Length: 292
Length: 141
Image 1 (tube, rainbow over the protein chains, first blue to last red):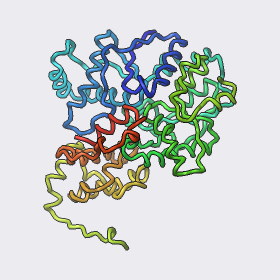
Image 2 (image 1 turned 180 degrees about the vertical axis):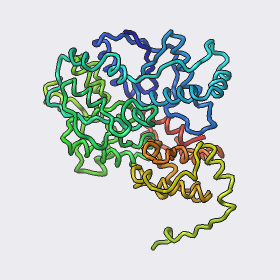
Image 3 (image 1 turned 45 degrees about the vertical axis):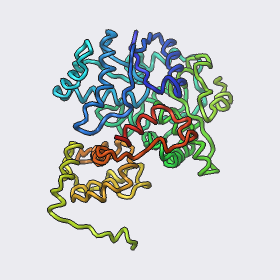
Image 4 (image 1 turned 60 degrees about the vertical axis):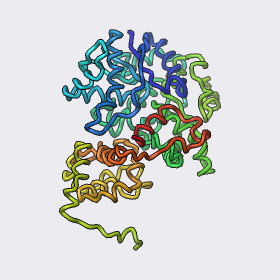
């Protein structure tokens, strides 16, 4: 199986651990990945104002690139890219007039976009195309005794029409970590917002939110928290520095991308896990469990 | 009771028909009068502890045309569009879109909420591109 891949801005720097661990895992699962040529930033957030069409141009242009590479579907890893590309796609599919305006604006493009690309998240590819039972067969190193709190955040599951699983109680990550041999924790904060881009000018709000979310995971006995969004990862991992300042009794907990957990189970080399990019070092707990 | 809770609110037909109300409905694509104030949006909002006006109150204020109270509120810059309120509203109102419309009314007058030049290099330092881009998209014109 071959699939077109849209990385987005942060996968190429701060979230290189997300990208490298995904590419290694997909290779082990026999999936060929082709990065979209000439991709551009999706804009990170879907424009909510009804009259604002210009901000849908960037995501739609990436869907034109997908068509140019003779593909009918595009795989995203970042939850924000997934949401923005998919919502913009649904927006123009439901409203031919705005699609026409956006196409007119991009008159230099050779392809007229018709709303016919499917935007998928890596988790959907793993669940619906590779299938979890087949992943289970390829597990080399079962993640025995590793208790994982699976964190979805907002944009994988909301709004309902866009989400890849149940809006209030998604279980796709739990189902994946279970076939990898790990023990998913009950985690009532799994879809609670991490305060997102407030991290730039109001980091204290993020530190507080990280405290609430992470102490909930810890109270359920979680060893690590699994995430799927580079912004959630930054807020829950790197902002623990600020959380400790506010709550000195707070104990750090490692944050991993679900793809890193998958890569460990599939026995990918440690270079593909890029632990150097983490604030809280996941190595001690993984060593203790005999996983690295 | 403190001064804030005793704030006088002037209700008039003129306020309710203010172009501001029309603009909020237009930009958000929502019918403000659909809200019957059940409060479910505020009950589930993870950001209420930081807010001065709660999400259900934002809709109430908008219904009543309390333009200045809304434009000066802290809440419109606290909401991070997590869409929990939208997912739970029994009337199917997109509250996050209403808050976006109020932000847009200010941003379109070039009243930016953040100025990255005021942040130190250390503060900007290790923040990933995804955070900077989304912050600027939401908080600047």
